[in-house]
Image (cartoon, rainbow, N blue to C red):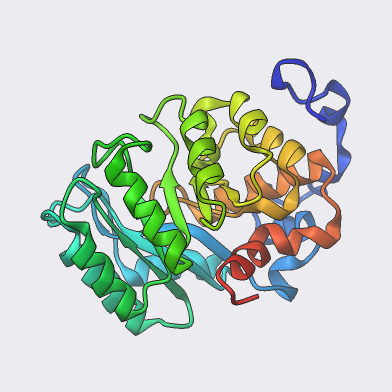
Amino acid sequence: MVGQLGRIPYERYFETSVVPEPGVPMHSYAYLRRLTFDVLETSPVWDTHAHLGRDRDGRSLGLDDLLRDLDEYHVDGTVVFAFDDPDQGVDFRVPNERVWAAYEQAPDRLIPFMRLNPNGPWQPEYRRCLDCGHRGIKLHPRAQDFPLGSPAAREVFGQAAADGLPVLVHTGYGTGAVSTELAAIARELPDLLLILGHSTFVDMPRAVAVLAAYPNIYFETSVVGAYDLFEVLDTIGPFRVLYGSDLPYASSANSLHELAVMANIVGVEAAHFADLFGGNLLRLLGRG
């Protein structure tokens, strides 16, 4: 288990399995293959967190660049959803349509999630996307300015639970200590599949202590710091952890390497690396 104050135990800093062989660059595919016990060659590798389109902050990512990044490290595909798009309107219909259009161009590589704003008239857009074939929902409480425990947000969670759709919630920068609210949602809606984007790192180490008991909560690993990622892997275990990159805010290269290194330091068994890097996500979506 994690050492005092969530620190990585001293002896784990000397885990020689994460040291590359002489002449092998740390960010090379050869090094990553060894770290992951060849999972990238033998098992489906799927990213849980990537954006398409453009954001109010000036970032953007198109389909060609997304696929190019995935291909560089043999990632089979990714969940995709809209940015905080300047064309979102009151219901995200325009960016959701763009995500669906990208999916139609690469249906074997993308899993489309709809993005919703609980503060707006979300129900018609939810129904339209559900009928179209979107496989989940993305919510961003900071960008759309709503508390997770608000009646509007809980209505979205309840509808998703009723329809069997997973909900990926931003729990990174700007959200604060939300573990208690998340626990209440998971407890009230045991059929809801709740994916914590960025693994609630802003509320660590408290988050894993509060949320570990809820089997319907999954921890997604994008842009999570090393200490916090160690804590998630060590406390939650490999079966409720989902690989994510947060493209384009991080890269497949950095995200894959960080999770692989920390899984080795924690001591995750080689047989479970396929779960971390795609198997858990595919099973959650009924594809594994």
